Length: 101
Ligand SMILES: [Zn+2]
Ligand SMILES: [Zn+2]
Image (cartoon, rainbow, N blue to C red; front, side):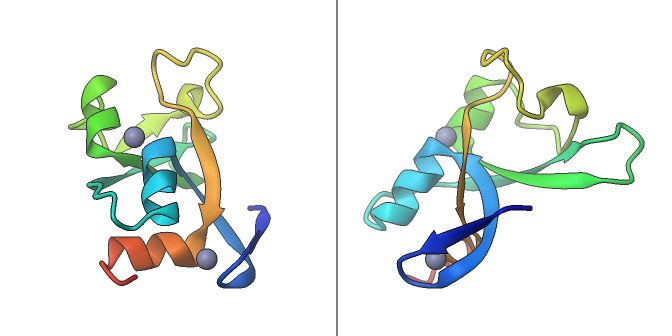
């Protein structure tokens, strides 16, 4: 996993999330419902990479009832199957999930 320089937390780990969640981290007045997905990088269940997608994206992409997605979703060039994800500070995301700002 990569690192990021957060203006609040300094050098921290990253999580991948959709743009709407990123927006909500940047502007906490924007409400967002977060759904966690795991992408099975090796398709054998040994390496699950969490991705955080907002409820609207999950609905738009028909992913609502899925929790684990095959590796083809990781960095998918076909943006019709999975929303674009961006790296965000893992601690900022955690604060957002826990409802603390
Ligand atoms: Zn979204
Ligand atoms: Zn942060």
